[in-house]
Length: 242
Image (tube, rainbow, N blue to C red; front, side, top):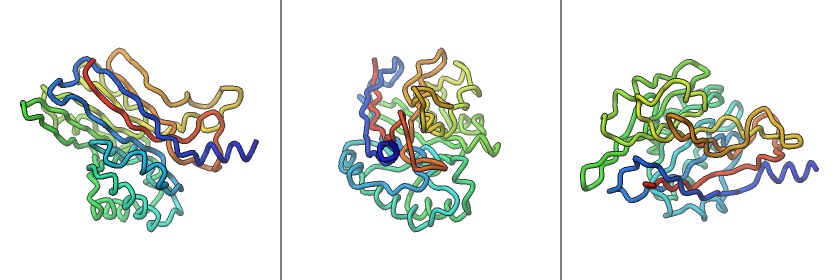
Protein backbone atom coordinates (compact mmCIF):
# COMPACT_ATOMS: atom_id res chain seq x y z
CA UNK A 1 0.00 0.00 0.00
CA UNK A 2 2.81 2.44 0.85
CA UNK A 3 4.43 1.76 -2.53
CA UNK A 4 1.12 2.48 -4.27
CA UNK A 5 0.68 5.71 -2.29
CA UNK A 6 4.24 6.75 -3.14
CA UNK A 7 3.59 6.01 -6.80
CA UNK A 8 0.45 8.20 -6.78
CA UNK A 9 2.42 11.00 -5.12
CA UNK A 10 5.02 10.98 -7.89
CA UNK A 11 2.70 10.40 -10.84
CA UNK A 12 3.30 12.49 -13.95
CA UNK A 13 -0.30 12.82 -15.07
CA UNK A 14 -1.10 15.57 -17.55
CA UNK A 15 -4.88 15.67 -17.84
CA UNK A 16 -6.42 17.34 -20.88
CA UNK A 17 -9.81 19.00 -20.62
CA UNK A 18 -11.84 21.31 -22.83
CA UNK A 19 -13.91 23.82 -20.90
CA UNK A 20 -16.76 25.55 -22.72
CA UNK A 21 -17.63 29.03 -21.50
CA UNK A 22 -20.50 31.04 -22.97
CA UNK A 23 -18.79 34.44 -22.96
CA UNK A 24 -15.37 33.31 -24.19
CA UNK A 25 -14.37 35.78 -26.93
CA UNK A 26 -15.05 34.13 -30.26
CA UNK A 27 -12.20 35.80 -32.15
CA UNK A 28 -9.59 34.06 -29.98
CA UNK A 29 -10.85 30.64 -31.07
CA UNK A 30 -9.43 28.94 -27.99
CA UNK A 31 -6.87 29.44 -25.25
CA UNK A 32 -4.68 26.55 -24.11
CA UNK A 33 -3.31 26.81 -20.56
CA UNK A 34 -0.77 24.53 -18.89
CA UNK A 35 -1.72 24.73 -15.22
CA UNK A 36 0.33 23.29 -12.39
CA UNK A 37 0.21 24.04 -8.69
CA UNK A 38 1.72 22.83 -5.43
CA UNK A 39 5.06 21.65 -6.76
CA UNK A 40 6.57 21.84 -3.26
CA UNK A 41 9.64 19.56 -3.14
CA UNK A 42 9.19 17.85 -6.52
CA UNK A 43 11.36 18.13 -9.58
CA UNK A 44 9.32 18.59 -12.76
CA UNK A 45 10.03 15.62 -15.00
CA UNK A 46 10.85 15.42 -18.70
CA UNK A 47 7.84 13.10 -19.04
CA UNK A 48 5.50 15.95 -18.11
CA UNK A 49 7.30 18.44 -20.31
CA UNK A 50 7.20 16.14 -23.34
CA UNK A 51 3.41 16.10 -23.12
CA UNK A 52 3.17 19.90 -23.01
CA UNK A 53 5.94 21.43 -25.14
CA UNK A 54 4.67 23.62 -28.00
CA UNK A 55 1.06 22.65 -27.18
CA UNK A 56 -0.08 25.57 -24.99
CA UNK A 57 -0.40 29.35 -25.19
CA UNK A 58 0.47 30.18 -21.57
CA UNK A 59 1.77 28.49 -18.41
CA UNK A 60 0.18 29.32 -15.04
CA UNK A 61 1.83 28.29 -11.75
CA UNK A 62 -0.87 28.27 -9.11
CA UNK A 63 1.26 28.82 -6.02
CA UNK A 64 3.41 26.70 -3.70
CA UNK A 65 6.17 26.40 -6.26
CA UNK A 66 8.41 25.66 -3.30
CA UNK A 67 8.42 25.41 0.48
CA UNK A 68 10.73 25.70 3.49
CA UNK A 69 14.13 23.95 3.14
CA UNK A 70 13.80 23.38 -0.62
CA UNK A 71 17.04 24.63 -2.21
CA UNK A 72 16.58 27.52 -4.62
CA UNK A 73 18.72 25.59 -7.11
CA UNK A 74 15.81 23.16 -7.46
CA UNK A 75 13.37 26.02 -8.00
CA UNK A 76 15.62 27.43 -10.71
CA UNK A 77 15.95 24.02 -12.37
CA UNK A 78 12.15 23.68 -12.43
CA UNK A 79 11.79 27.14 -13.97
CA UNK A 80 14.39 26.32 -16.61
CA UNK A 81 12.38 23.24 -17.52
CA UNK A 82 9.10 25.17 -17.70
CA UNK A 83 10.74 27.69 -20.03
CA UNK A 84 11.34 24.90 -22.56
CA UNK A 85 7.56 24.66 -23.06
CA UNK A 86 7.86 27.77 -25.20
CA UNK A 87 5.05 29.85 -23.67
CA UNK A 88 4.87 32.85 -21.29
CA UNK A 89 4.88 31.83 -17.61
CA UNK A 90 2.70 33.44 -14.94
CA UNK A 91 2.87 32.86 -11.18
CA UNK A 92 0.72 33.52 -8.12
CA UNK A 93 1.96 33.17 -4.55
CA UNK A 94 0.95 30.30 -2.27
CA UNK A 95 1.18 29.96 1.50
CA UNK A 96 4.24 27.70 1.39
CA UNK A 97 6.12 30.07 -0.90
CA UNK A 98 6.10 32.51 2.03
CA UNK A 99 7.90 29.94 4.25
CA UNK A 100 11.00 30.64 2.16
CA UNK A 101 13.06 33.79 1.69
CA UNK A 102 10.29 35.12 -0.52
CA UNK A 103 12.30 38.13 -1.63
CA UNK A 104 14.92 35.80 -3.08
CA UNK A 105 12.17 33.74 -4.72
CA UNK A 106 10.70 36.89 -6.22
CA UNK A 107 14.11 37.83 -7.66
CA UNK A 108 14.56 34.34 -9.14
CA UNK A 109 11.16 34.52 -10.82
CA UNK A 110 12.05 37.90 -12.30
CA UNK A 111 15.43 36.63 -13.45
CA UNK A 112 13.77 33.77 -15.34
CA UNK A 113 11.21 36.00 -17.02
CA UNK A 114 8.24 34.77 -14.98
CA UNK A 115 5.47 37.35 -14.59
CA UNK A 116 4.31 37.48 -10.97
CA UNK A 117 0.62 38.31 -10.72
CA UNK A 118 0.50 39.85 -7.26
CA UNK A 119 -2.86 41.63 -7.36
CA UNK A 120 -2.28 42.58 -10.99
CA UNK A 121 -3.53 41.56 -14.42
CA UNK A 122 -2.13 41.03 -17.92
CA UNK A 123 -4.02 41.63 -21.15
CA UNK A 124 -4.22 39.67 -24.40
CA UNK A 125 -5.89 41.24 -27.44
CA UNK A 126 -7.14 39.52 -30.58
CA UNK A 127 -6.66 41.07 -34.02
CA UNK A 128 -10.34 41.93 -33.99
CA UNK A 129 -10.05 43.90 -30.74
CA UNK A 130 -11.45 41.46 -28.18
CA UNK A 131 -9.68 41.07 -24.83
CA UNK A 132 -8.75 38.29 -22.42
CA UNK A 133 -7.31 39.36 -19.08
CA UNK A 134 -5.49 37.06 -16.66
CA UNK A 135 -5.70 38.31 -13.08
CA UNK A 136 -3.70 37.01 -10.16
CA UNK A 137 -4.07 37.64 -6.45
CA UNK A 138 -1.47 37.30 -3.73
CA UNK A 139 -1.90 34.71 -0.97
CA UNK A 140 -5.06 34.85 1.17
CA UNK A 141 -3.61 33.16 4.27
CA UNK A 142 -1.06 35.94 4.77
CA UNK A 143 -3.68 38.58 3.99
CA UNK A 144 -1.87 39.91 0.94
CA UNK A 145 -4.72 39.30 -1.52
CA UNK A 146 -6.35 42.35 -3.05
CA UNK A 147 -8.76 41.38 -5.79
CA UNK A 148 -10.03 44.94 -6.15
CA UNK A 149 -6.53 46.09 -7.04
CA UNK A 150 -6.20 43.36 -9.68
CA UNK A 151 -9.58 44.30 -11.11
CA UNK A 152 -8.49 47.93 -11.35
CA UNK A 153 -6.07 46.77 -14.08
CA UNK A 154 -8.99 45.33 -16.06
CA UNK A 155 -11.27 46.54 -18.80
CA UNK A 156 -15.01 46.23 -18.27
CA UNK A 157 -15.42 44.47 -21.64
CA UNK A 158 -12.73 41.78 -21.19
CA UNK A 159 -13.05 38.04 -20.59
CA UNK A 160 -11.52 37.54 -17.16
CA UNK A 161 -9.57 34.55 -15.85
CA UNK A 162 -8.46 34.63 -12.21
CA UNK A 163 -5.51 32.67 -10.85
CA UNK A 164 -5.30 32.26 -7.07
CA UNK A 165 -3.69 29.64 -4.86
CA UNK A 166 -6.58 29.27 -2.44
CA UNK A 167 -10.08 28.39 -3.75
CA UNK A 168 -11.63 30.53 -1.00
CA UNK A 169 -11.05 33.46 -3.33
CA UNK A 170 -14.44 32.71 -4.91
CA UNK A 171 -16.09 34.08 -1.76
CA UNK A 172 -14.64 37.51 -2.48
CA UNK A 173 -16.51 38.30 -5.67
CA UNK A 174 -19.96 38.01 -7.24
CA UNK A 175 -21.42 38.08 -10.75
CA UNK A 176 -20.82 41.83 -10.78
CA UNK A 177 -17.05 41.46 -11.34
CA UNK A 178 -17.64 39.21 -14.39
CA UNK A 179 -14.84 36.77 -13.64
CA UNK A 180 -15.67 33.84 -15.90
CA UNK A 181 -13.03 31.28 -14.91
CA UNK A 182 -10.87 30.66 -11.83
CA UNK A 183 -7.75 28.49 -11.44
CA UNK A 184 -6.72 27.24 -7.98
CA UNK A 185 -4.70 24.61 -6.15
CA UNK A 186 -3.86 24.38 -2.42
CA UNK A 187 -6.15 21.51 -1.42
CA UNK A 188 -4.09 18.65 -2.92
CA UNK A 189 -7.44 16.96 -3.54
CA UNK A 190 -7.32 15.85 0.09
CA UNK A 191 -3.97 14.12 -0.68
CA UNK A 192 -4.84 10.98 1.30
CA UNK A 193 -8.45 9.89 0.95
CA UNK A 194 -9.66 6.99 3.09
CA UNK A 195 -12.59 5.10 1.53
CA UNK A 196 -13.07 8.09 -0.76
CA UNK A 197 -13.16 10.65 2.06
CA UNK A 198 -10.58 13.37 2.67
CA UNK A 199 -10.22 16.81 4.23
CA UNK A 200 -10.92 18.37 0.82
CA UNK A 201 -12.70 17.32 -2.36
CA UNK A 202 -10.73 15.84 -5.21
CA UNK A 203 -9.65 18.37 -7.77
CA UNK A 204 -12.20 19.03 -10.51
CA UNK A 205 -14.20 21.69 -12.35
CA UNK A 206 -16.98 23.32 -10.32
CA UNK A 207 -19.77 25.14 -12.11
CA UNK A 208 -20.94 27.86 -9.72
CA UNK A 209 -23.62 30.51 -10.03
CA UNK A 210 -21.10 33.31 -10.63
CA UNK A 211 -18.10 31.55 -12.20
CA UNK A 212 -16.45 28.28 -13.20
CA UNK A 213 -13.79 27.13 -10.73
CA UNK A 214 -11.06 24.62 -11.57
CA UNK A 215 -9.17 23.10 -8.62
CA UNK A 216 -6.12 20.87 -9.14
CA UNK A 217 -4.92 18.00 -6.96
CA UNK A 218 -1.49 19.56 -7.45
CA UNK A 219 1.84 18.10 -8.50
CA UNK A 220 3.67 17.73 -5.19
CA UNK A 221 2.79 16.88 -1.61
CA UNK A 222 3.03 18.41 1.85
CA UNK A 223 4.25 16.66 4.99
CA UNK A 224 4.37 13.07 3.65
CA UNK A 225 5.35 12.16 0.06
CA UNK A 226 2.25 9.98 -0.19
CA UNK A 227 -1.14 10.19 -1.91
CA UNK A 228 -4.20 7.99 -1.97
CA UNK A 229 -7.23 8.57 -4.16
CA UNK A 230 -5.94 11.97 -5.29
CA UNK A 231 -2.97 11.31 -7.58
CA UNK A 232 -0.57 14.06 -8.56
CA UNK A 233 -1.61 15.92 -11.69
CA UNK A 234 -0.94 18.81 -14.01
CA UNK A 235 -3.30 20.05 -16.72
CA UNK A 236 -3.71 21.23 -20.27
CA UNK A 237 -6.94 23.23 -20.18
CA UNK A 238 -8.50 24.41 -23.43
CA UNK A 239 -10.93 27.29 -23.02
CA UNK A 240 -13.34 27.98 -25.87
CA UNK A 241 -16.79 29.36 -26.56
CA UNK A 242 -19.70 27.05 -25.95
